[in-house]
Image 1: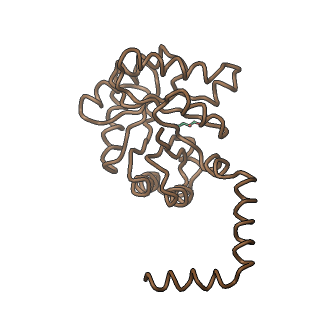
Image 2: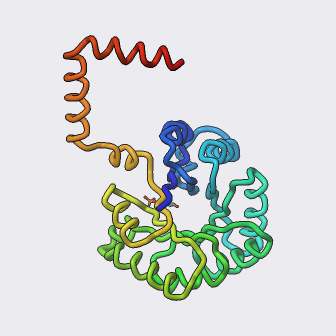
Image 3: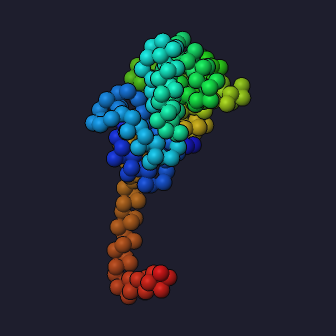
Length: 227
Ligand code: E4P
């Protein structure tokens, strides 16, 4: 499963991109509204940092407006994927944008039927929101699993993005269900790193190595000789 980062904060993208784990990014109007600076510059910077598909969302509510915004957003950077909200106008806009060769991430998808409509309109990516389903006491894993099954059974080419990720266990669920992509907030990436046994194990390795100072001398000489 590919990992995308879900944020408008360029400093956090820069940090996590350096780990070498990112395949893309997603933003939305709410995330960008939290940031200072020009949204176009932020989006372009994120595109450069992740070096992969980066979603930027339209805000118009009619097909013509969505299409015009989609073309303008795509002109910001070659990695842009136009994010279009699920609705009748969004389906029409998606058909047009993808027909013009512009990749679309259809967002705000909460059911298998919505996902099937999004895919039929030509969406490159279909974003299913897990956390917001959990918030209304709907089993998000069951919904995501149904979408994965529907797409696999029908040979649908659209890739599923699991979004609205709220904790590391959501990420594991997405991977187990066969979802192609999870888009993950920076805070959850940090939570995915941590395990007390890793911390304790690393501390013990350091302590044992330092108990033999001559080993440190040997390793430094080895590195110098290799330089
Ligand atoms: C990503 O594409 C979505 O916009 C995002 O994951 C939504 O997350 P939220 O439900 O935590 O706002």
